[in-house]
Image (cartoon, rainbow, N blue to C red):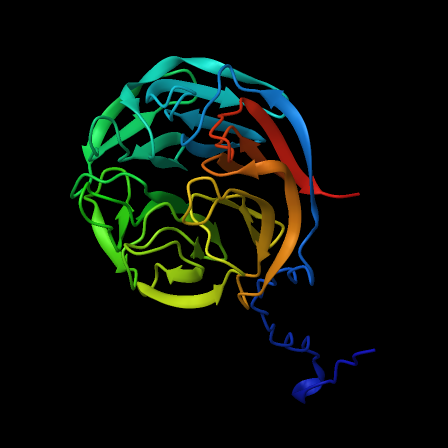
Length: 322
C-alpha cells in the first residue's frame, strides 16, 4: 500500500504520480516449422483443354489464374482459365494475342503478365482484371524475353532471367505499376526456365537452364540490397519446374533435366534459411512445364508435359499429409 506523507503547514498534498514507462511493442515472428511437410497429391479438377507453359498466378482465397500457354498441338493460346479448389473455367477475357512461356504476378488486385513467346519473343506487359474485366497491354520490358520466372514482394513484381531469342538473360527486373521497369539485380549466369517463389522478404530462385546445361543452383535474391547469393544446390540439375511457398518452406515441383523426356515426379522442399533440400513428395507421373501455384494451404499443379510428350488436362493439389 502507498502512504501519502504530510508536508509543511499541516496541509496534505497528493503524492506525485509515478512516471509512466511506455513499453515499445516488439513484433514477434512465429518460429518457422522445424521440418517441411510431406505433401500428398490428389486430383481435384480438370482443365477445359490440355495445357502447358501458361503463366500461373495466385489470386488469394484459394483461387488462381492460368494465362496463355501451349495446347496439345504445341500451339500458343490466348485463353485465360480461372480456378478454385475444385473447378476450372474459361474467363470471358483473353490475352491480346496467343502466347506461352510468360509468367505473372498479382499486384493490387490486378494480374500482370510479363513477356513470353509467340512467333517470337515478346516485350509487353499485360494487365488482366480477374474481377471480370479485360486484358490489355500496359507497358513493356527493356527487351523482348520469354522463359521468364516472376515473383512478387509487396507492390513490386520481379522478373527473373529469360531469353531474348539469342541470349540467356541474367537480369532481375523490378516492375511496379505506374513506374518504369528497372534493373534490381543480376544473376551470376544467364538463366531461363527457372522456378521462383517469394518468402521472408526474399526471392528464392531454383534451377533453370544456363547457356550450357540445366542448373542445380538455388539462389536467394534480396531486393533491399540487390544482392544474389548461392543458398544451396538441388540433388540434381532441374529446369522447367515450378515452385510455391507453403508453411515456411519453398517447394519445387516436377521439372526435367537437359533431355526433353527426362521429366521427374519429385517434389523437393527448400529451407529458405539454410538452403537445406529434402524430398517432400511425388506427383502421380513425371511432369515438366506445369502450372504450379500456391492456393491456400495447398499447391496447385495443372497441366504440364510428360516424358512421352503428352499434355494432360489434369489439375491436382499437393497438401500436407494427414
